[in-house]
Image (cartoon, rainbow, N blue to C red; front, top):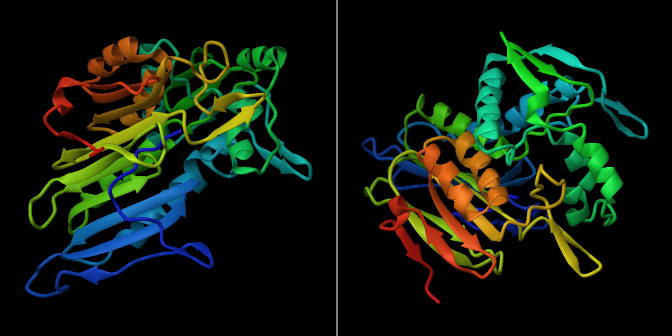
Length: 355
């Protein structure tokens, strides 16, 4: 579960739930001075917050559409017509979703091919701690639906977990000349990287606009772009995993960066006195117990930051730090006792929250 909490703008609550705030200030259209547009909405099953400075048109609506289209047309396993849906062979029937169990060789788009190549490499480099083929396992646990109250709490038994794990594994997938080849019963689930991919797409989009600065959060994944009109750095808050609400501290960042957090404190359920979160360990099929409650990764790629935050959470601090360093990423680790560990590159730009 991803939960970087940016110091952005709070949800605007109204009769319809989360409202939508958009307004312009800073003398729009006056002498080429940048206007600021802010919005809060829902996409990819999470809150999307935007602050955008531009001398051109308001881009917040375009960015929101980009995120929604990415989910619907490419990444969502729930959409039968999305790329991932078609790869998984999804069909909707009266009693739910039917997914193909047959081996598949599927021609895929260049964008998805390149993204899956990078995710496959992270899976290999992490020893499988990150795995984009856990579809059978995540469906079995169904933590998101249970945590939201859409489904009753039910903890799968060991036999069910073992059976699901037999149908998972990034090694069961290969990429060959524009095609994705999957072994029998394997289902993709890009949930642990999708919001980071969305941030990458946002960054690429912004480079072709008149936006001079922006910060956009898609749930727990954040992209900072350009700079504020006054030149001050972006302030990105990291949630304190002990409360899930308060801030642990803030990162001061300038320019284009991608930040993702994985933590076991938001999407979780309780059964017989035990709490179960949604970050699953591909080795044993259960929620990861690595001695960590939160991992934040900062680097130059949304996909990498998102996937690494999950992998590092599963691996634990020692191995997670090694993996992050391999990708030139900076990290913030919080362990089960509340101890904070910053990588060297963040020590001068992280400010702890006042107690």
